[in-house]
Amino acid sequence: MKGERSGRMKEALGRAAKAFLSALYPEGITCDVCGAELVADTRYTLCADCLKRMPFITGHRCLVCGVPIKDEADYCLRCQRTESAFSKNISPLRYDGDARKLVYSLKFGKKKYIAALLGAMMSDEYIRSGETCEVIVPVPMSEAEVRKRGFNQSVLLAEEVGRRLDMPVLPALVKQRDTTPQKELTGKERAENLKGCFSAAYTDHIKGRKILLVDDVFTTGATADECARTLLKAKVRSVTVLTAAVTVPAARVEPGEARTERNEN
Ligand SMILES: [Zn+2]
Ligand SMILES: [Zn+2]
Image 1 (cartoon, rainbow, N blue to C red):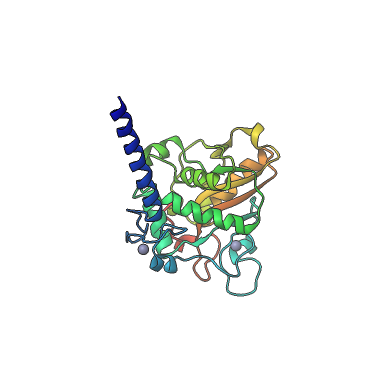
Image 2 (image 1 turned 120 degrees about the horizontal axis):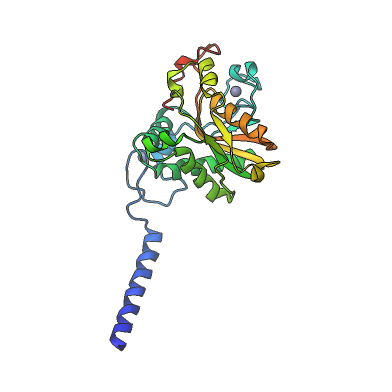
């Protein structure tokens, strides 16, 4: 009996020592982009080279959609010409290069762990924005769409952000019908395609609240706009959008001709 107890004790001590050592020297943690082993404990699961290449948005940006703008204008062309139901979009990244690769492997490579990396970047950017939202709502997919993919990446991102910001996540939007994938449509068609496809749920819990709407990519803003309209109809106080990346429109793209803005939505 005594031997058994000391055996268990030894085992427990062994486990504790292992946990201690692996905290000092994390083993098997690799860069989410290139797969290189990470030697130091980093804020993001990226090696120094991939972190350097990551297309973070810095400096001057559109006050509404958050896209980087070169001149001193407050709004990009897209936002000068359209009125949005949401107050602003916050994104840490341009939808480009490795950021695009990461979103792609989350959605289509089913690498769900990437939601932790993108969610960390999104939380940091949200904190920098100084916004004071109260409830997180993920952009929903229809039941058939979830069945096809196996998960909704916006829900994964919302949960990660909620955990980090200690903010409740509520599925307060429901997508009632399937829609044509947005990437197959032009700007104008995108808005038409989504009209009336969302409905609000948990309305007692969101009424009068400042909502943080979470999605993976902000492209034309059509999805965010339709979601925000639906939430505002349910009497929320405001809707701020948080996405992992924002698409930078190609030069001189006219509204309604946003075909060149490729997005794998
Ligand atoms: Zn790397
Ligand atoms: Zn803009």
